[in-house]
Length: 79
Image 1 (cartoon, one colour):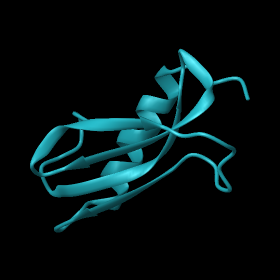
Image 2 (spheres, rainbow, N blue to C red):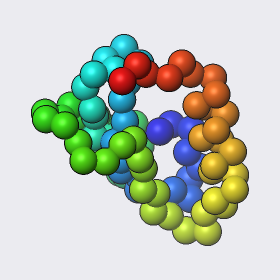
Image 3 (cartoon, rainbow, N blue to C red):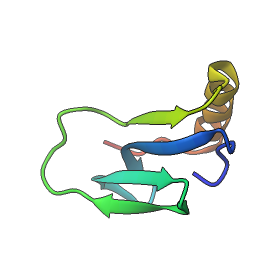
Image 4 (tube, one colour):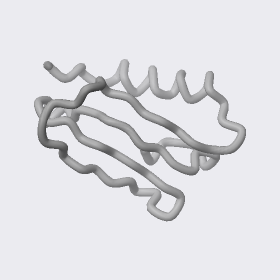
């Protein structure tokens, strides 16, 4: 979340953490809370890991390349 460009005003999504691969987390970051927040979820989500980004003049290709780089550097969570 810290690595997102300033054009991203809000991001929200669902993720699994490497250290807690069996617990889904809702994450969000807003302009007024740039550090972001995580909320553990109970139950089984009906969607897989995903994110929605809201912003101004977002460069989709650059955001995708940045995400691909992060995912390539991390080990996939066992599910």
